[in-house]
Image 1 (cartoon, rainbow, N blue to C red):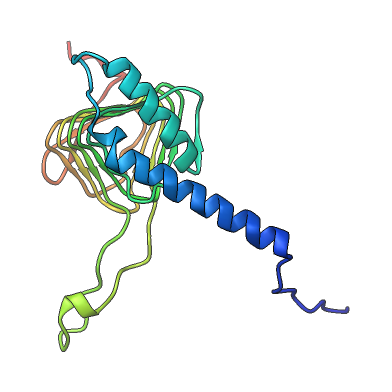
Image 2: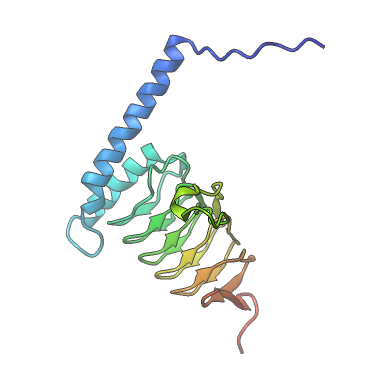
Length: 198
């Protein structure tokens, strides 16, 4: 079997296309972080227009997005190029979203949630942690119909199941199954939503 030599030389048009795409995303990021991020959110006047403007910019920045979602004031998502968000989902005020986050449809988030997708190495005791570099990126995947309460922290590599609820202030260190309600630090399983409390 003959093995083809890989072609590492891109055509000039492919290089230009990538550079233009990168330049365009950089401009969208600049507009988002310098202007749109600071525009009002509900219930302030002009919040609807502001939210629409942020959504349009985010659609240009994110790897994949639906036709409709909400981005409130103060949301940060780094370069955002590996973020995906589904239909009718919401990133609430001052959320901090790691750049490897996949969010399904109909996801509600409270203000000031933090989703992490990376960390730092710390195993070598002979050198400071700041010189040990970053750990490999581990995406966070959030299913459909999820409610994430205010100030929840989700650690790298976590999967949040469909129809689940994460109580406010929780720190999620383990995967959350479908239909689960979890809460606490670290977050623990509280009950299955399908089972009545009666």
